[in-house]
Length: 109
Image (cartoon, rainbow, N blue to C red):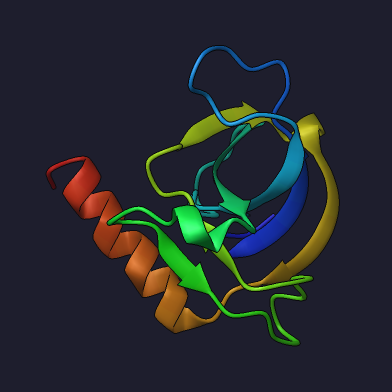
């Protein structure tokens, strides 16, 4: 699993405002981290609910999305890799740069 790859991920069980159900997610963790956990941001097709820091994803042959979507940047989660059900595609370097910029803002780096 590599940073920038998109997987179908089981986000259940969820509590309160946490992202729910089986949905797409992008891996945001460096490949240099050797762990049984993987850190992700969920992807939503509800682009009309896009918030300030969410990142728009236009469907293309590389990401293999079914429709235009958004990365929900504020919903960073770490899960056991077993929650990753199926590889879908990957994002381009421009999108990965946007993720990295957001992470610097989020963690005040």
